[in-house]
Structure formats: structure tokens, C-alpha cells
Amino acid sequence: MDAFTPATAPAFERLAHEMADAARRAVLPYFRGGELSLENKSSDGFDPVTAGDRAAETAIREIIAAQRPDDGVLGEEFPPIESKNGLTWVLDPIDGTRAFMSGIPLWGVLIALFDGDRPRLGLIDQPHIGERFVGVPDATAPLAMLYDRFGARPLKTRACSRLETATLFTTSPALFNAGSERAAYDKVEASVRLARYGADCYGYAMVAAGQADLVVEAGLAAYDVQALSALARRRRRGRDRLARRSCASRRPYRRRRRPRAACSGARFALGRLMVRRVRREKVADTIPERRLDAIHFKEWFVPRI
Image 1: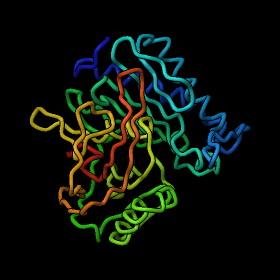
Image 2 (image 1 turned 60 degrees about the vertical axis):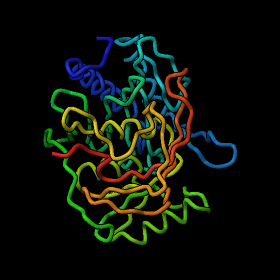
Image 3 (image 1 turned 90 degrees about the vertical axis):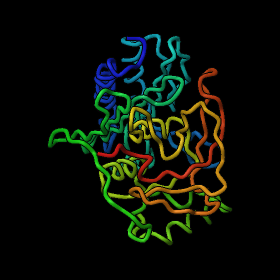
């Protein structure tokens, strides 16, 4: 099972669930309880990392080393491992470390599988609440699914035809720079019905689950978005369709003079509004470093049902 195909997709999904289960066991003792051993990775700001981050990523890496030793690994907390077969696991052991260290259950474990072209599998897991969002767009029957205490069910976005009726998530307006990014974000927030802060990856999950309509973020790396990209993609007429190219695409990116946003199929021309900046990470020569401007709305996140 060296290649990701529709036939091998279920096996890769089972492995991703096993990784998420291991990460749950490793990280939960630190949430609202264990010694966090907090460190700041930034020299000019606050970029926290905890013992929980390292424990979760270590648990996932141990499974990869045991079952998929030729696969590469790109994780937030430890050095990358180059792939020998073209497949790379992209990991964010705790997306939302600030929420984690504050005892707020809006953080999550992000796991994605990248094949050198695009993410083929994406998983968001919230261990404390017990919710898991999984997307495998290249499977035989591609759906985005929610697994929780009530069982398993497909995800479906809700109808939203206007920004005036939309609910927006962002981690914090303070994360946008004081120039064009913040002005662009303020323009969007002023247009929506409701804006909520501090959800991190859980905001994306709520868009996928039909509880919100829009997420706007800034300054993200590959491990922040690859799992979300796989959850977003959908197959249509035999081809993968994206509202915007994800950070995993190796095809040239062409900036549009008038980028568009999608909300339940309706499109809004937002002029030269650029409200989300994604930085590609480098894993050997597989993922070239590049900065992309992108606006991510509902059609980007979840397959239509």
C-alpha cells in the first residue's frame, strides 16, 4: 500500500483514525490538569508550545514509524522527515495551543496525508469533546464525516446567500497586520451578521457542520491548513473541484485581480480584498516555499451533499 488510490483510501483512513486515537490518549492528561511545561518559540512575540503538543505529535510519529516507515512527516514541533515514497503526513498536534493552555476546548489535532500534489485525507479531532471531522475526497464514495458520541453522519453546509446573513469565525483580529490585512478583515466583519473569535480549527469544523458560514485567518503554515483542505475538497463529474487552490497544489498560482468569495454557491466580488495569507512549508523539494493570498469560504471547506 505505497500509493493513495480510491481502493487504498479506506486503509489510510483507518490509519489516520488510529493516529488520532493515539494523540487523544497522549494529550488529554495535559488538558486542564498535567504540567504543561510551557515554552515560547517566538523571540519577538508569543508562540507557545506545551508538553501536550510534543506528546501528541510523538504518539503520531511512532505509529508512522512502525507502520509506514517510508512515509515523510511534516509536523509543527519536530524536524521534518523526507518521504521515500511520495507520501507525507502533515501534522499539527494541537491547533489552538493558546486555547489548550487556557482550558478552552476549541483546540484540535490536525492530520493530513499529502501525496506531492494535494492533500488526499484530512482529519480534525477534538479529544476533550470527542468530535472528529474526516474528509477523504478521493475515496470511492467521497464524503466529509463527523464522528461523535451519537455515531457517524455526513457533514453538510447550510444555505447562506448573502454576507449580511453570515456567521464569521476568526481566531483574533489582532493576528492581521495593521495595514491592508486588518483593513480588509474589518470590511468583511462589518458586512456579516455575527462574528465570533477564538475558535481556531474548530471554526472550520463548524463551517463544515453547517453551524457557521465563513472563516477568515492570517499567517498560517502548511500544517495549519492541509487537513482542512482535504476536508474541503469535493469530487464532481470525475474531477476534484476547489473554490480556491489549496496550499498543497504544485501548479502555478495566478493572482486574480478581483478575488471572489463563495457562500453557499453565491459569489461576492470583494475587489482586491486579500484576507488570508498562507505560507507553504518546505519538505525537501516536495512542497516549495511560497506565499499565497487566498480567501477561504464555504465551498472551500466541505463536499456538497
